Length: 186
Image (cartoon, helix red, strand yellow):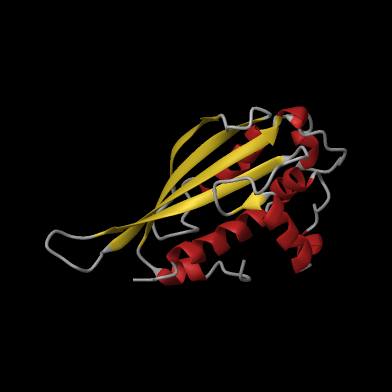
């Protein structure tokens, strides 16, 4: 059993999200839209620390508008009857997407795709669509395909924000599959 399964998944998930230019554009308000921008670890870390959060909370008092992706994982080892050794692990992955009401729509000025077709669309809808493209029915996190369980509305305590929740299950039988996506430690 891998004692670092949640940490390994966090690294892979952050890397997958940061490899999507539209997600990076929405989270950074088009400040970092080029992969070369994110090669500077300080800039990637700033985006991760501020708008891509590997836990379910917005850190501190938010005094600026923006969009945030928060995510977290539950690890559920599956044991055969009368066994002390797990057969596989089911991982529950939840994304909370929140956007300030003052900037509900993505007002990008970038004329290239995928930005041009996303202009004036709702940020949370765009983020949900891109996350589903990355994770739904893909085996990029475990051996079995990820399964979307639901995509529903989310109303955080802060009434200036609104959001969506996406919930996936992932069946993991192999540590090597999860480790292949690691590019750097988050």
